[in-house]
Image (cartoon, rainbow, N blue to C red; front, side):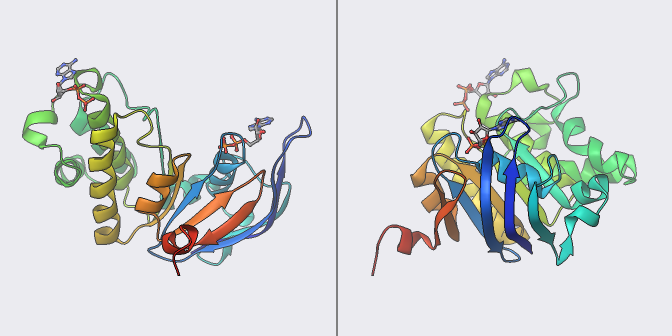
Length: 228
Ligand code: ADP
Ligand code: ADP
C-alpha cells in the first residue's frame, strides 16, 4: 500500500533528515514510527502526502509513484491527523467533521449525517457534543474530533503524528484502545508517529524503530520486545 524505496531527504540547509529509507506498509496495517525527537519521523510522514518531496528515491502509494500524482488528489486518499488538530474554532464539532466531505461534493445533509455517525464512533455523542465549539471541549475530546474529521473524507490511508500526545495518560489509553478498534473495523492503512515506545507497542502491527534518519528495526511488537 505504502512503499519507500531508498528514500533520502536533505533539507536546503544540508540536514539529512532521512537517509536511504526502504520499507513497506501493507493494506490495512498499522505501523508505528518510534524514536527520539529529530530522528526523521515527521519528515517521513510529510513525504507520503507530498507536503515535502524526497531528495532521492521513490515513494509508492497503491503501486503508483507519488511524484507523478497531483498532491491535492493524493491528499484525498490520505488523511493527516496532528497533535494540534487544527479544528476550525468558529465551526461546531459537527460542522468541523462535515465540512471537508461537503467541499468534496457530498450533499450537505448526507455529510452531516455521516459526521454524526463518525462522532459516535470516536465516542462523542453527537447530540451532546455536535453543537459545541472546539474551545468547549477537553483536550481528549478535541483529538477525537480530529480523528473523526480525518475519517470523514474516508481516506484509505491515515497519517497520524503524535495525535494523542497532548492528552493525559488515562484518556490517552482510552483513545489508543478505541482507535485501534476503529482502525481494524474500517481497515485503514495507518502510519502512526510517537516517541512513546509503549504506545508504539500497544498500537502497531509492526514497529519501525528510528535512529538518526534510519530505521534500525522493523518488526512486530513481540520481536521488538525480544520475545522468542
Ligand atoms: P522527528 O519527527 O523524528 O522529531 P523530523 O523529521 O521533524 O524528526 O526532523 C528530522 C531532522 O530534520 C531534524 O534534525 C530536524 O531538525 C531536521 N528538520 C526538520 N525540518 C526541517 C526543515 N524544514 N529544515 C531543516 N531541517 C529540518
Ligand atoms: P480531559 O481529561 O479529557 O482533558 P477535562 O477535564 O478537560 O477532560 O474536561 C472534563 C469535562 O469538562 C469534559 O466532559 C468536557 O466536555 C468538559 N469541558 C472542558 N472544558 C470545557 C469548556 N470550556 N466548556 C464546556 N465544557 C468543558
